Each structure stands twice: as C-alpha cells, then as structure tokens.
Image 1 (cartoon, rainbow, N blue to C red):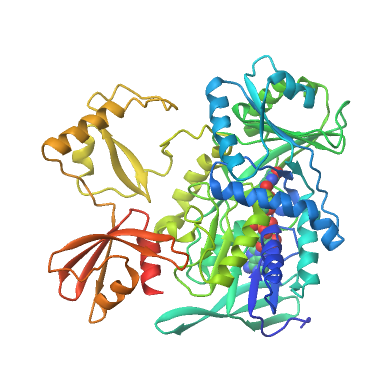
Image 2: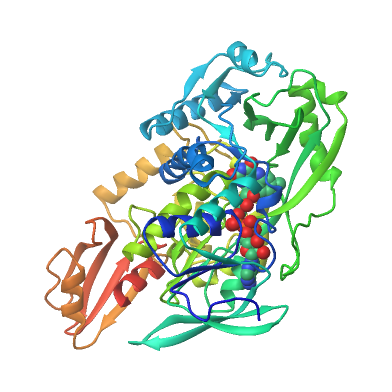
Amino acid sequence: MKNIPQHARIVIVGGGIVGCSTAYHLARLGFKDILLLEQGRLTSGTTWHAAGLIGQLRPNRNMTMMSHYGIDLYARLEQETGFATGWRACGSLYVAQSNTRFRMMRQQASLARRHGVVCEEISPREAQDRFPLMRIEDLVGALWLPEDGKANPTDLCMSMARGAQQQGVSIVEATRVFAVHTEKLAHRPSVRGVRVRTCDGEQDIACEILVNCTGQWARQFAALAGVNVPLYAAEHFYIVTGKIEGVHPMLPVMRDPDGYIYYKEELGGLLMGVFEPVAKPWRVDPIPDDFQFQLLNEDWVQFEVLMKHALQRTPCLETAGVKMLLNGPESFTPDGNFIMGEAPELDGYFVCAGFNSSGIANSGGAGRLMAEWIAGGEASMDLSDVDIRRYAYFASNRRALAARTSETLGLHYAMRWPKYELQTARPLRTSAIYDLLAAKGAVFGSKNGWERANYFQKDQSIVGRPCLDKPHWLPLVQREQAVTRGSVAVYDQSSLSKILVQGRDALALLQRLCTNDVDLPLNGMCYTLMLNQRGGIESALTVIRIQCEVFMIVSGSAQAVRDTHWIVK
Ligand SMILES: Cc1cc2nc3c(=O)[nH]c(=O)nc-3n(C[C@H](O)[C@H](O)[C@H](O)COP(=O)(O)OP(=O)(O)OC[C@H]3O[C@@H](n4cnc5c(N)ncnc54)[C@H](O)[C@@H]3O)c2cc1C
C-alpha cells in the first residue's frame, strides 16, 4: 500500500477547490492531523474546467460575505504559498437592459456595499469605455466592481493545496473512499473512519471528523453513510474564441444577465458562457468515479439561443473563430444555495458542496466558514440559508432534483423577484384540504416541499406579474387580514413542523433549551426561542404542554430537521 496513514483526526474527501480550501483553513485554525483524499488527481472533478470568474455581487448576505473574503484571500495567496493563482483584479461590469433590472442591480449593489464591496453605478457609455467590444444601444445602466476579477481555477486550487500542505496537511491522490464507518455513542451514530481503495488494495483509516467535499458526487457519496445531500448535476456551457483584436488580459469580466451571458478574456480571445433559463440536467446516475478531467458532448442546440444574444451584444463574435464549446457538469441544489454544515443523521460528518456554479468565487469563504463550524461545533455566524438541515429527508428524490435543476441553474441571472416561487417539482407535499383550498382559488407557494396557500384569488384568469412595486395580490391579502381581525379565519397549518418531546426529563430539557419558562399548565402554550452559544436564534417555536410529561413543539415549515437535531444533539 502507498503511504496512507491509518489514523487522522479529520479526513476531507474530495480534492477540488472546496476540499483544498477547507483543508487550508482548518490548518490555519491550528488543526493538526488532517488528511485529504482524492479519488483521481487534485482539481480533476469540476474545478479544472471552470471559467474562473470571481465576482462579489450576490443575491444574499452570506454569499456576498463569502465572495468578498475570497477576493481578499486570492489576492494574497500567491505571495503566501509561492504558487501562482492566475488572480487578476481586472474588475467586472454588470449591464442592465431594462429599468427594472437596473433597479434590482442597484438593490444588490447596496447590499454589497454594506459588506465592504466597492461597487459604482455607471452609464452604458462608461461601461463601453471599459469593455469596448459591446454594443450599448439597448442598455439603461451598468455596475462597475473594480475589485472583482478572475483566476485560473486549477492554479488557485493547487495554491490552496500547497498552502494546506505547508501547514502540515497530508494530501493523497488516486485514493477512493468507498465506505464510512460509524459507531453509536450515547444513542447517536458518529463517524469512526473510512475505507479506501487504491491501486494497491484496500485499507481502513480511523477518524473523528469527515468532511464531504465531493462536489457533484456529494449526494451519492453521502448516501453511503445514510446522509441526505440533495444536489444534482447539470450540463453547463461556455465557448472560447481565438484571438480578438482589443482583447487583453485586464479586460474586465462582463455580465449581461438579461441575455443570460457572461464574458471574460481567455488567451487573447473571449470566453463567453451562459446560464440558460431552462437548463439540461445531466441524466446519469450514479456519476462515474472515473469521470476525471472529462467533459460532456457539445450541444449546440442548447447553446444556440443564447449565442444569438451574445452576437447581439458583441458582434465581434461573428468573425471570431470558436475554438471550443465546453460542456462540463456542475452540481445545483433545489434552492440555489450551497449545502454546508454537520449532517443531522451522523455526528462528525460535515458537508461542504452544491456550489451552483460559483464554487471558485466562494470556496475561500466557504472553506473558512466550514473550518470555523468544525472548530466551534456550530456555525460562527447565521448560516441558515446554506445549512444542510434546511432540507427534509425526502429532498434527495432524484426525479424531483433533476426537474428542479433545470430551473435552478437559470436562477444565476434570473430576476430575483420578491416572494418569487420556484415552479418545478411541484406539488410535492399537499395537505388534506389542498383540493378544497384550490377550489376556493388558492394561489400556492411552496416551503420545504409543502404547498401552502399564499393568497386566494377567485378570478384565476388574472395572472399577476412579478414586480418590485405593489404586488397585485396585496388587496387580496389585506382583505384576508381584515376578515381575520374582525371575524373568524381558519388557517391550514399542516406544513408547520411538529415535534413531540416526551418523558421524565422532557420539561428539564425544554427549560434548558428555551428562553421562556415552559413549565406550563396542562394545555397551556407559549411562544419561545431556542438560542445558540452566540445568543443567535436557532429556532422560534410554540411549545404546548399536552400532558404532564408530553410537549408538542410547533415551528416553521422548514425547521423540522434542524429543530430535531438541535434538541437531540
Ligand atoms: C462550465 C463551468 C464553468 C464554471 N465557471 C465558474 C466560474 O467562473 N466561477 C465560479 O466561481 N465557479 C464556476 N464554476 C463552478 C465551479 O467549477 C464549481 O463550483 C467548483 O469547482 C466545485 O468545486 P468542488 O471542490 O466542490 O468540486 P470538484 O472540483 O468536483 O471536486 C470534488 C472532488 O471530489 C472527488 N471525489 C468524489 N468522490 C470521491 C470519493 N468517493 N473519494 C475520493 N474523492 C472523491 C472528485 O474526484 C473531485 O475531484 C463553473 C462550473 C462549470 C461546469
């Protein structure tokens, strides 16, 4: 057998950019005895063929903070490790084709500025001065982020791997983990080790903590240990052209979300990629272990529609020779957010995967947060939107995931309307009175797979358009409110999470976990919070004492797994 240790405190599985960043940051926090295992070569999964855009304009706070930290790290990594990253702070542009899009961009810009990102609003003409190859007649405005940039994903990953090794992390390639050993400790299953296969044979490695950083393999790898990681791969495309006059290495990255396209300089030509609104799930199951440094077949039919948008934005593409159409798979999650944190099914089993085509930009931030999470036993800040416990156990249903993936890839450049509801893979869970509600004109939204009546509209022929101003449903909801206040209303609470805590110690346990006094009279109820070490809110819940030693907890529709894990852990 090659030189593989028989014990490591932490085993990281997956040598893509996310695994290498997690190893690097764990080592920086002072952890010793870390082993990273990769079934092929480092970067050989998805990382090697990424486009390398590193941008900070993100739809929410956590992603913004992660990518902002990433830029800070990538700018200094080469100096620290002595290994080139290809990082260039060439800046980036976002252009808007409509006033509404520009308004939405300005909202995102103000979120970004709140977290220290430099972001200016500029005119189409000023955008063209920075990216002269584009037509601007149809544009209404643009954003300029001078600190954004690009990197070579392979070099960036190798630089983080080198930085991890310099701090004592062991990295072993050509070693596939094919089993996870567990043990029941204090009624909870915990990670105890892994079994690996190399060209020399098989071996066990004992460990206390396992981090699943296996990218698009994360769902099938997690299933080996009974852990639920709902993600699914989609085919993902860009073209690379030959040299184009005027294209130079410091040409800014340019994104035209209304055209679903982006550009970056690549070897004197343009790399132009797409986030099509209806994507193509990669219908293979399981993903082969030997899918290393491999690509999928070209699909010009899928690409062509957006190629038309690109020809319109940058007419120089008409004469630039296309050297290649790259089709590489990347994993997407049901809500377009990453999957991070400790698996509720198995103590000591952490997951960092599902990067929805922004794993290069976010691996720095995600690796750091993951390391802090492992060190502290809980997240170092509110990471609810990426917390693995937001998903119910059925969320890994492959048919539903494939259907949803066709929609989530496009979210990247979609208009993020307030209260927007995803449409695919629905309905999944319906309450006993779903048909009754539908007959009354319910317009449903979906939470954790549950169909819930958002509002009632008798005239179904009126289709409200999503907007940033007063929504068409506001008067309908106002009417509902007035009836609730002045008369009687019945709410279907089937979707809410319900947990029974029962037994001799039930009261003592809840008294320790809840902020309110829950020593209630029989059938009494109270609204309370469960807090973490930081004083942050883990859950807001209603506790009802239904018998002397039996309490029912009612909380949010997507809280069941998280609350149960918090209570039993
Ligand atoms: C066409 C395209 C363009 C992209 N462009 C960008 C971009 O411009 N900017 C950006 O931020 N992101 C981009 N991305 C997304 C980015 O590439 C990914 O999010 C990122 O590479 C994911 O990294 P990872 O480490 O999670 O996965 P991977 O790089 O796939 O690494 C996972 C590793 O785990 C290994 N593994 C799996 N199972 C096992 C096992 N059982 N035992 C041992 N090892 C195992 C695999 O071999 C693999 O090497 C793009 C993606 C694509 C497809």
